[in-house]
Amino acid sequence: DAKTTQPTSMDCAEGRAANLPCNHSTISGNEYVYWYRQIHSQGPQYIIHGLKNNETNEMASLIITEDRKSSTLILPHATLRDTAVYYCIVRTPVYSGGGADGLTFGKGTHLIIQP
Amino acid sequence: NAGVTQTPKFQVLKTGQSMTLQCAQDMNHEYMSWYRQDPGMGLRLIHYSVGAGITDQGEVPNGYNVSRSTTEDFPLRLLSAAPSQTSVYFCASSSIYGQGARRSGNTIYFGEGSWLTVV
Image (tube, rainbow over all chains, first blue to last red; front, side, top):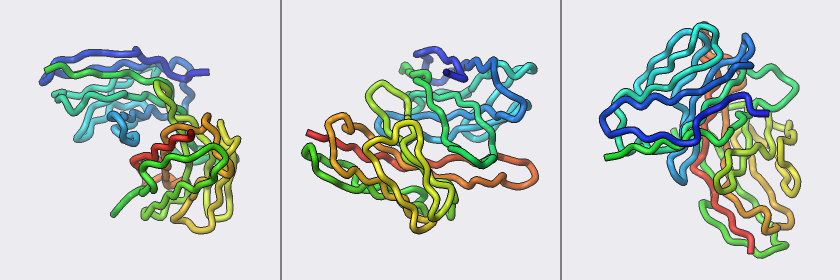
């Protein structure tokens, strides 16, 4: 059972902001929203994560709605190198013991940056 | 700091052969795991370990064995390769403890992948 829902694919013009939505309506109070991306043939790369406040780092911004049921990853000035599959994942940030701490990947959003 | 290192990057096996995919991390992470990724699919967890001497099964463990004799290394063994094990394999590691007062979370770091073809 998928914990997140993302569009299958999106296009964005180079130099523009890319806004990737994610729905996570069943998120629990102690779960964070994580974003990873996978550029073709490479290992997944961590982008950003957050709990309820908006977050920004050198790669992206994460906007989480007040009810925490959805979020948006923003790449402020997309470049051709940002073409990748973007995964939105919800999980607890600290291992709670007794089971796998692995990330559960869905199919993600294939973001294509157009020149 | 090399991060997570996987070897080999590419391997072709015949059905029934055995081999080991190597994974090493230099970040002193307690948690290590193996995923496989099939075309057009997300990553699926094979096995994981929360420390030396401790391993457990993930979502798709059949046909694979693991061991964790040191914190740094987490090899994945295919005892009798089958064509269904043709896939890209990723090793990952993370600290299982929260980081600092901000509880920034235990980011998982991935290797660059090992492409395995079983013919």
